[in-house]
Length: 107
Image (cartoon, rainbow, N blue to C red; front, side, top):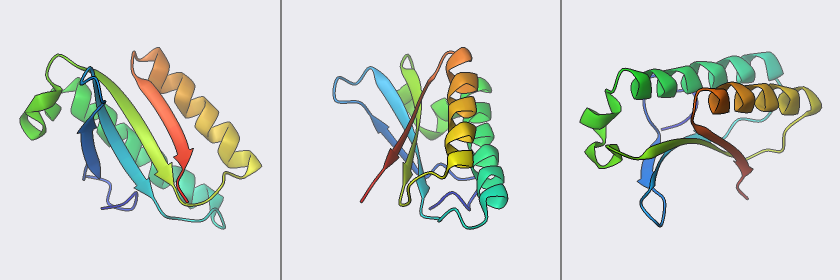
């Protein structure tokens, strides 16, 4: 599962202390087509947020009940300047909604 599959949660896990439910997006795309890449990420993040907010997540991943949520993007490629600005905006929006947002490059 990847960022291109909008309606699918790529990976669900709990933090080591089991206090945070981590919803991971697997992002294997480069940034050659920044606009499309940003739209794919935006759509996927919106699906994740919707799954949390409509409480469907508890049916899909019952272990998440009573936990805080983190949306994590695990990416293959470094961010471009525009992508960094986009990710910072996303981080602010997600965190203003009461969740944690993390972007990390995985080698």
